Length: 345
Ligand code: F0G
Image 1: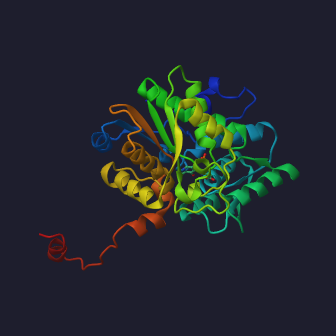
Image 2 (image 1 turned 135 degrees about the horizontal axis):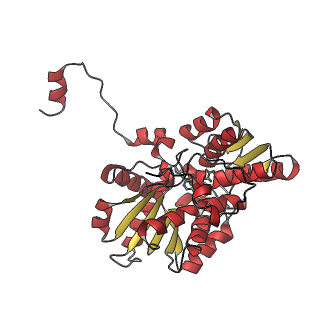
């Protein structure tokens, strides 16, 4: 098996890199596209799951972060910063560590999961919990970037979008063509912007793009920013997406739409993915499947067509949620007969 070289080397000809760009890679990308056997049967569609949790830091963010960090180095930066609901900061911290850059992370106080916080800290980022939400944190990050010697690596940085579009390249290469439908969660809206860019650069056929938001954080569905976004899917708890226009372009040009799903819908989908497909993703990622269920119920999709769902982040990012959703374990004596009895034999 040839070595997968990471996003920059694999897609060099389609990314804004030159011989002067340093390669900073954790061999991100090349993630599995897994056929969802149970869901395909149940829904009468050909459903595929792009498992972005298999990236080195456990989310799709690595695809864009490697390009953003490489370009920051090329431009002589010594420090990077980002606002984050957790995954961007985990990725920024890892790539900055590898590149030897100072990394400053601004997160909404109490607003990110344990796994993601652990990642940023273990890689040596300077983490500040701001007394605001993600949107307020992003404002501070932008202002830091405007007034101080620090590069911004949020997805308002165009290199992030460039790297993230490689996910669509891989899907088209794996299926031999674009899927008919593409369903993904939307928070700050960089990723849907990037996926659409990737498809438009991949050939003539294009999927219909659906962006799924959590009901309590659904500005794109409502058509206006949400001042106080709320959802248990903390990764997409965002009220005023920075890439608003790019997201609208994706859905309108492709004939798709934005839709909102409840937290209960998200948890139902989270269980189905884990229990029927064997895939553990974080709640924000399960919003993709919750959205697909809703589209099927509304008879929006044509039977037998190909659908790709993006599972954006690994389930281990949010162990608290996983345990809260599971039955509690039993502590028992180490005695085979007792164990067998408890197991119903
Ligand atoms: N899924 C996960 C797991 C995410 O972490 C994010 C965004 C999204 C979906 C939505 O992607 O913002 O491009 O629309 N997380 C960002 C962060 C905001 O800071 O980690 P988007």
